[in-house]
Image (cartoon, rainbow, N blue to C red; front, side):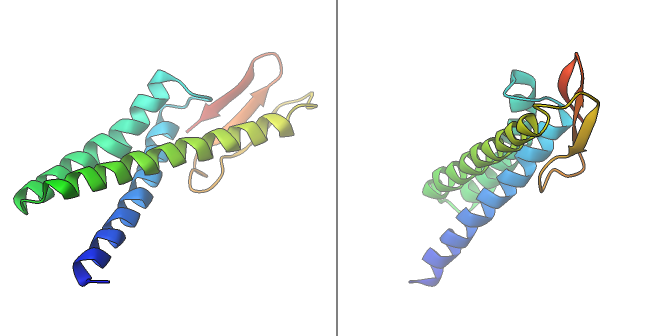
Length: 129
């Protein structure tokens, strides 16, 4: 494997991880539970749009248009995986509170542990930041 190819693989994996983390942070700032336009837009702005602009500028400066496509695909992949991770955590919380009669809450799953999921009887589940 050439150094250039290895660098592309490392960049792709790095962009997936960056998008996963940034999308989750943006989604948590929207304080939404489940898929919503507000939460998805907030996550996409941080997970795809902002790093996408940086990736595009770097790739254009290096005259590598193919790199733009590859890294944008990585950003979208990381964001989708992050959304699925968040939805899995919310589903787990819904299972945990299925028989709850009182107020329940817990931090979200890693890496979004600074935000919480809270269940209020009669009002359902909501998120806090």
